[in-house]
Image (cartoon, rainbow, N blue to C red; front, side, top):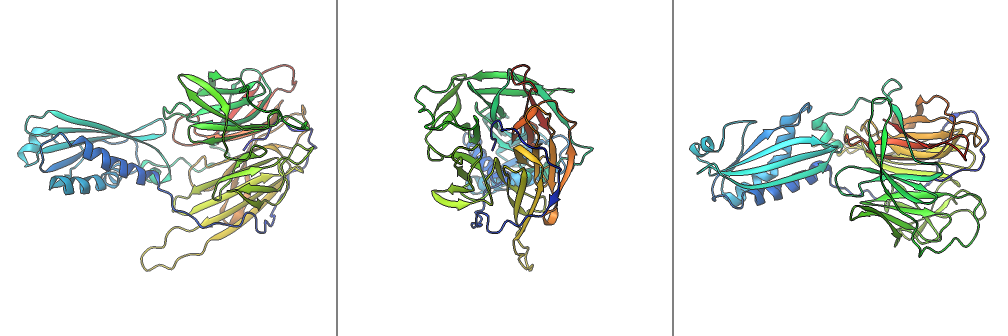
Length: 477
């Protein structure tokens, strides 16, 4: 979640310290969600049956024709992905086998007693695992069917494809791209146009603007894909605000914005090659601001404190009242999966005094046969001296959260970005800090904006002079 421009903030010394969270948003029962591997296996099973539908009925051999370059375990990936497809083909065709990588063509497969050869090419493209299927009749070597599967890479697939290095001060890469103008109130990221890439949606005072990141060696370039004006049917805010602010929440192929000048939410989508902004229906009541949490349902609906520029500690979740520990400028929640299979539910917030609070609920990996099940663990941590910008992600995909934060500095007095990491048993440490920035950082977000399959954390730095200069989008990975 991103909050907008802040009132002048008093600088504070950064002091780490544990903070007891009590019963912050009482934990709900975990619901198992299908992993990227699960989804890819099921889709490959369906596509394999469709690809051989026009081939003669009989034995099928499935051949991994190309495997992802540089994968940690490409053979294991092919076996894990294709096993359900082979089982389904055997049930449908009478006999099916998984062949070795490469191998000979359809005519040779025919001499070995197979009626159909199903080639599967696996590759990694823009953060997705892509499988392309081609079926051949071994009678005449003619191609009879084609199909494809595209699945975003997650930790379940990373086990086969390889993980990034665990983040340290030496591995952090922070570069910026220059945005048009200044005065941005919130930022998020979503695949608006459905092409598999993620766009940056920046909320400007005049309306949403959508950008694509073009990675560069020294700095990034930002291609503006379009912008939209606020819809005409938005009711105005019934009362003046201490400052103009907004939140932006990604929901599938849309971003929902709640702007303090309007008394209703706005949904930003992509249609007919253009950015579209229209009044949204939910996910919160019109007088609430949607932010992302970790517990189901994962949209928390926050209410501004009357006459102030921060949110009340009572939020709405699934139509019921819930509480967070204190009033807050920004709140972010995530669910992450560690490399050992443990699942982490994490919520963080920054309150108006500059205090960061983080809670983690860790669900251990499923117990193996003959092993005793481990109990869930809860950890909490905190620190002082942070500002209104807060984003949470997992930029090394190890299941431990990284937090990107601004500092508690007065407007126009410069700022700094810090990357914090939550270590086992709740220890929260700074792993990287930027040089002092001349401008001010008010908003931050997370998403895979460069298409490498690993998400990045990003924040917008406003120019030191609010009437001159251009904002910068910092991307930390």
